[in-house]
Length: 285
Ligand SMILES: [Zn+2]
Image 1 (cartoon, rainbow, N blue to C red):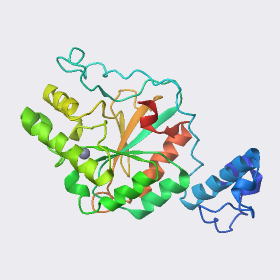
Image 2 (image 1 turned 60 degrees about the horizontal axis):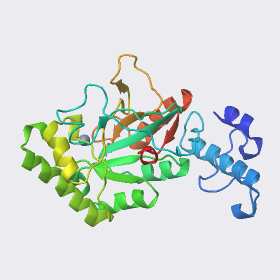
Image 3 (image 1 turned 90 degrees about the vertical axis):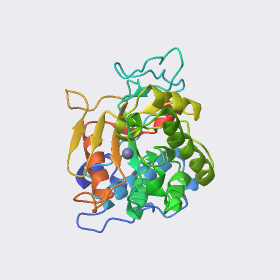
């Protein structure tokens, strides 16, 4: 990794065997970043990223996503994922991929059980955007953890109060689950989201009708799911596509054989190797 990255930018690289500089500092630069011209600033930022990638033991430096699209793409339901009344009632679309030709994927992280401080540091060091879908019964013991996430520019979205199988509930019960979480989020995070993900990706017409009434505009699910030790694919071609939404979970050693940092390392190594950058989902909605 070091050799590859150093070919791109010689000045930011530690000698072989030397300890990686601490992420957050600019290796080899003495002055404040704002004193540098734009080109030097970009070089310094790249050097910082090289050091961060080494620190978190990535195979290579994650790619920088393109600027957000000037015009937002039109989001429609994935074929076969519509419900009766979808268009007539203007219900939130369920989709797994955002229409774009850019080589970007979107990282979404669900539930909220594991609250690993190292995960926050890693994503902040590497500047990787992500979207969290929170279920209240798992996050209510530590809203502060998710506020830190939010303060770093990540978006928090609705994943119900108690993570039920929604199609098994009545319309009113579904509405309580979704609107109830909107109320919690408004109180705890200052804002009721417009993005909602049904638990397990399961929904029916009542789910989308209730979601709409609760203020939801989008219901993204996912095209790939990454675990600490493998990937799962929705599509037969078992590969990433531009605009794919990738799911993972706030889980740690209690649930799987590794930490969130290990999980993110697997995710980032694969998307970078395949030429994808991680972009912010909300920039495209
Ligand atoms: Zn979930």
